[in-house]
Length: 254
Image (tube, rainbow, N blue to C red):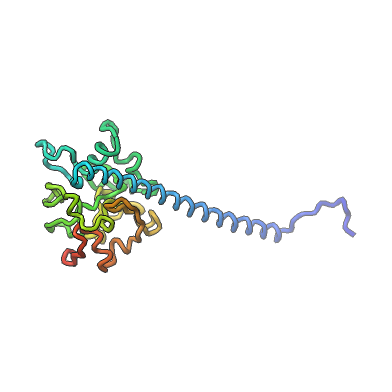
């Protein structure tokens, strides 16, 4: 008979079994927490994009045109409400961000909490800033080709789309026209034409589990897959890049 004064204890096998169960539960908990965090960040980013869409619509309502991608005429006093580029136009005209806030591109609604850029790479723009979000400035177009079909301007040069700005009435289907979306190369534009060849700095594919937050010209937000945005060649995917709501297959890169 067992002496009642003797202390009971786990055997080694039982102890290892308990440790294994605890490890499994901890792993499951970490997975749930990680997914919850990623979902929360995606929602936060989606709200940022929505706020940028509201700012964009505010600019359009006031000026009846979309902000220029870059405004090379600003030094001559041309299109002064567009400032140097579309990010400044939205920040100073609509978002109430002071010019003294530098760099405003990485503050508040301009900053996606899921974006992690490679710090050992130079930022891919002359301002030296990593941008979280990009403007559909060019439409479905290949670099170097004319007749931009996006929002950034009606003429093109080495700078990209230029003045005159795209008028509000030129958008054939605002609910189907991409305006601003998650950016994936750190620049302040988003374009399909160069997706395959553009260096992906940081975590573009894992940023929102293979999706991107997109605000359209009517202000609604969607989270399509990256495949739909950048690879699908059906009309439903292509028309969303162009202000005339046509697929423009002739603009696809060979």
